[in-house]
Image (tube, rainbow, N blue to C red):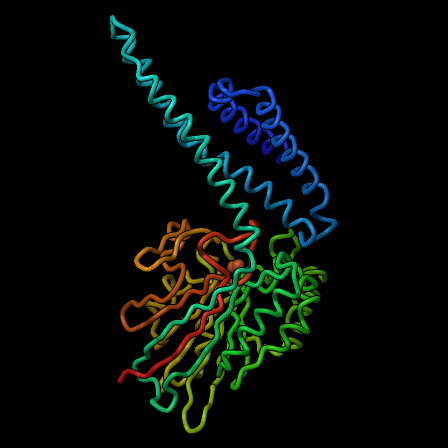
Length: 407
Ligand SMILES: [Fe+2]
Ligand SMILES: [Fe+2]
C-alpha cells in the first residue's frame, strides 16, 4: 500500500512537471525525442523504487547500489525543486483567471511572465541535476581539512595548542571505497594528533558494513588515544528490528567489538581523564541523544557522574540538538561539545563571509564552531555520506582542532 502511494506521488509529480514544461519542449526541434526521454527517465525511477522495495530486506545495506539510489534521488529532487516556479506560475494564473472574470478586455494577460517561469522550472531542474551529478563525481571523496582554533577558559597553559582531530559520520555502508579511507587515515596521521575522536554513525545500520574498513581504521594514530561515541545509525533502529531480539543484540555487540578492534575506546555514557605530563582534562562521551523522534540513549547525568570540574571538560555527543536541549542549560560545566550528524546536508556554500546550507533550517548549529554563554560546540560536517552519494559545497570533513588556553 505504501508503495502504491509512493508511485502515485511520483507519477503526479512527473505529470505536473511534464505539463509545466511541455510547451517549451514543443517549441524545440526533436520535440518527440525529448518527451520520450523524459518519460523513460520516469520509468527508470519507478523500476528503481520497485527494485529497492523488493531487495531492501535481503541485502540489508546499499553498498553496491549507492550510486543508483543517488541517481534516483537526483532525478526526484531536481524535479521537485523545479516544480516551485511552476507552482508560482499556477498561483499567478489563478489570480489572472479571477481578474479576467471582472475584466472586459481579456488581452491584458502577461504571457511573457508565464513563459519566464516555465523556463525557470526547466533551468532550475537542469542546473540542480547537473550540480548534484558533479557532486557525486568530484565531491564524494574530496576530503577537506578544516582547521579551527578553540579557546577554552581554564585550559592549562601546559596543554596549549593541544591537537584534537575530530571526524564523524563515516557511514561505512555507503562509503564504498577502502582506498579512499586509506587517504583519510594518511591525512590524519600526517597531522600527528594528540587525540582522535569519532562522533558516531560508523555504519548505516549493520555492523558488517564496517568489516572491510577495520584494518584501515586501526592505522589511525594518536598520542593520547582514540575515542568514540555512537550515532543514531549505530543502533540498527531503521530496519525494523526489535531491540529485544537476538539479532539486534548480536549486531549491537558486534559493533562494540569492532570499535575496540579499530582501536577506538567507545564511551557509553562515561568519562575518561586524559593526562598529558602534569596536566589533564575530562573527556566525556554519551550515547546518541537526538531531539524529536531520534533515539535518546544518551544519559548526561550518568556520564557526568564523578566528573570533577576543576579541569575543563570536553563532551562527545553525536547530535548537536543535545547541546541546545540538555547540555546548555545543565548544571554541568561542559566547556566544549563535539558533534556531527548534520552532514551539512552534503550541500551548501562555505566561502569566506558566506556559510549556507539547507541544514541550517533543520539544525541551529550545523557546521563549525558556535559559542553560547560560557559553552562552545563544534559540529563536524561528516566524512561519509548517506542517501545522496555526493557532496556539493560542504566537503567531507577532517576537523583539526587546536585547543588553546586563554592568554
Ligand atoms: Fe550521519
Ligand atoms: Fe546521525
